[in-house]
Image (cartoon, rainbow, N blue to C red; front, side, top):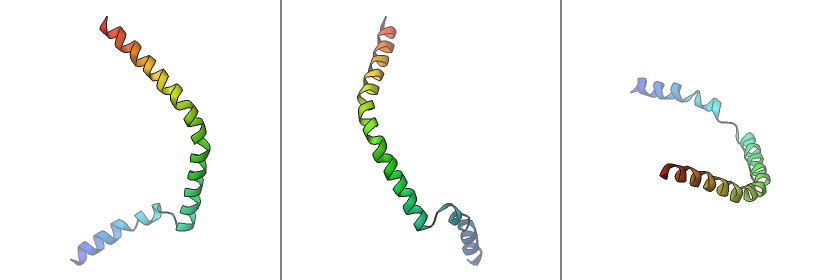
Length: 67
């Protein structure tokens, strides 16, 4: 049982390196939120155009396959 405890403890120790402290995590999440807000306007304008372009491409592929 003691061996299992040490195995779990030492295998989980390197994982603490990958998780930033809370103060850095809040800054990171704030930056993500700011990027999301800035990109949302261009995404709303681009989405209908992208959907229309994909529809045209798929229609051309389907029409060429049926002939």
